[in-house]
Length: 338
Image 1 (tube, rainbow, N blue to C red):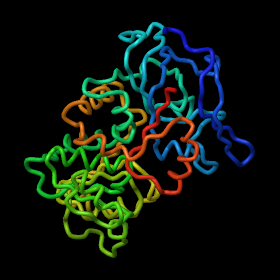
Image 2: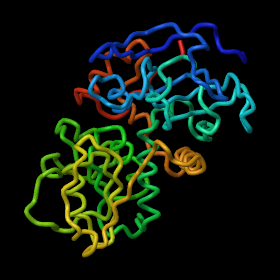
Image 3: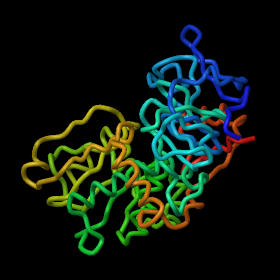
């Protein structure tokens, strides 16, 4: 089939006063944004950003009504003049304005600009790709940047710390790093998830209290060869003052807060690097290369183990509230196709 259906299901969030109302609706192709590539969405996933997009206080959504879902994977229905893409091609897309500034993945049909589309790499099914999703891409990009900045499994010089390790980015980072031969220490605020993290490859578990504690000293004992940090706030300050000489901290998140209280000492006395990780506007060539590697050498062992839940499109609404309440762990994939 090379034409979009006349009607398809979508989860739509719309703002009414100070509240955001969500419901499943039937949409038509006329409701879709402009773009060269129309995709029959098979799978999506749930991210913290998706929950923020439907929260009245989330300040993520740029427009309403909005179909959330910052990730999507499926099959090309139409590719109007898009070079290298044809109907029937398996593709994925994430980042840019998807699910925040224009309709996203929680719909059976989506439309996006051609340069936002990534061919599904060898080694990954559409479901696999959404088990990774933006979170997996962010985790992989963090590892790539750390290794480009000198981290090496053959000579790491110490363990790698993953903060927020039961979340989407953190759990996949643990699995990727362990598969690449690093000694991984994982920090979490959920004591009950220690076995889950060990199953992913973590050798030591730290408490959130330890990794977000304040210190009167600008630097503490050197511990980490590198840190994957999807948390921010006090956790980033901890990471900076405990990272080893010439180590790096890859920062991608703000669930722990946006303020950062630190000093210049980790940077000028230990040569620590703070690497900003942006998965939203990553250039297309970098995006495609990271996804290619996620299908090969960066693919975490036991990818299915990352998937802690599979839900249908009609279950997404309720689950987003669980995400906002901090009750989610690992990755949740959304079966969009009926």
